[in-house]
Figure 1 (cartoon, rainbow, N blue to C red):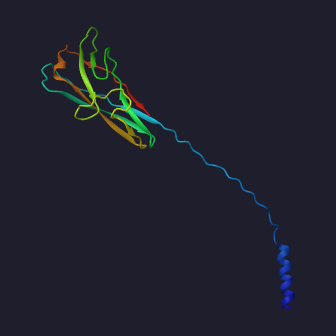
Figure 2 (figure 1 turned 90 degrees about the vertical axis):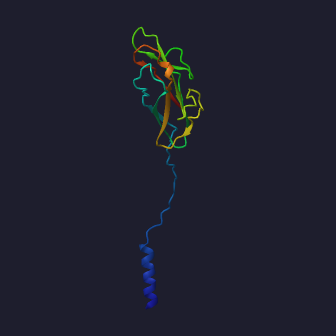
Figure 3 (figure 1 turned 30 degrees about the vertical axis):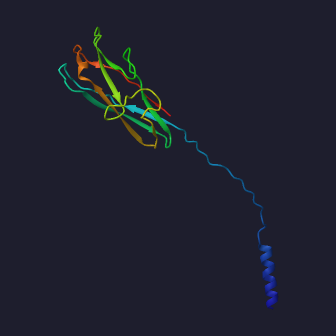
Length: 165
């Protein structure tokens, strides 16, 4: 009787078992291309108001903010400016009043000691590597006291900061 019950149970389980199905697999890639990218913005450098009697250097600073993809090497260069005749090492601000041909000489530096001129050359000491966060670079400006032998006016130059990555 035990054998008969076991045989019946085995037969029922075989008949009740589902048919075995074959399986196949496929793979696929999940992709994302993160490109090298950078953004740049700058604040004005304002030397303020002064008169011809200044006997000390007139110093001011501004900032350039850079944000680059993590691991992206970059350099920031500053052009000579918009005033006619400017060079990277001899910049001038021009008077904004019509007929005023006077200019005020100034310099831009990449270090607080104001000894390293900041020009447009790629690879200057303004090279860095992005980290996906804003990175701030300080521009150090200087007007020498003898440069104020000009007529009263507002003087201006426009600098273009360029990031190369």
